[in-house]
Length: 130
Image (cartoon, rainbow, N blue to C red):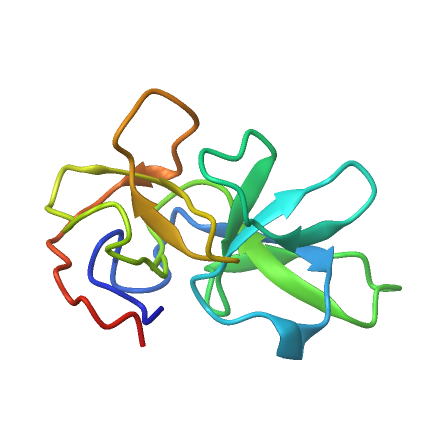
């Protein structure tokens, strides 16, 4: 899925703080959704994932990380950030709630009660996820 305009906040803002988490940087893309399984971090791959941790952001205002961690990826859990989305649950309109999906690392329109990541700031209608 491509970075959609849904959830787009224009990149880093003064309100985004990234936390460096141990993941292989080449295994994730900017805007991917990450969950914590209890022992490791991975791309979220469950709809309405209650273990969602945050969004990969390679341009947060500040990143806090363990200096001993050689392979750390910055993840934000608050503020505005670009989120990779799909129209798997229908077209996304500004104001729609965004949740995790069955597509690893990709968000989708929330269509029922459950865990959500945030609110879409713009429409996303592209049926081609790439």
